[in-house]
Image 1 (tube, rainbow over the protein chains, first blue to last red):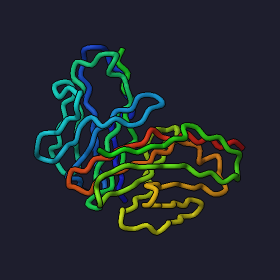
Image 2: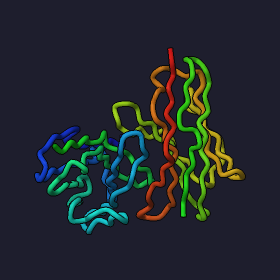
Image 3: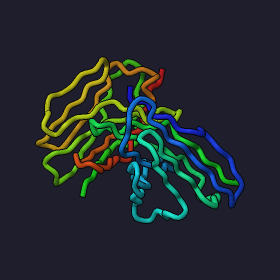
Length: 114
Length: 115
């Protein structure tokens, strides 16, 4: 149990385009989901906390207009990187929290902006 | 503020050796959770264990064991008889127990197990 999927697993896009990443909890309902960013050989950096039916809470320094988060259902959260630029290239990972307060992670999405 | 320190950055062992990954944490909360996650080269973080602050019992799961010492604020992870498949980055993490609790990660330890 506690499986989280993420789609796409990788994406290459041109600078200026927007990219949407989906995060789904497959076998449980998740009131709270999280979005992280990870640079090579570094730890995970929390970008935002996403609660179903309400606005996301962004960490300090994360541009909410650039990284749009929607959590419309108990099993789906989406992250849209708007007007992507090369510096947005990174590994984006989502997680979903179970009722037992454990975060299970998706497989990640590698974004490359040309 | 919460903090997790994984002082070891890279560890290299030969297969079948035992290896211990250290984790030291700081928190003002009286109730909290401690976690270990494994991140293999594929990138996905795999949940290994969650420990409640009230439960100081050590845990063993196959070749994996965890030693939780509240007195020293440590939650160390030992792999017995390591295998090549254990090669990965291992993260220790800490969270409070609130509704919107967030994970505080350590910087991770890169474990390389050589055949």
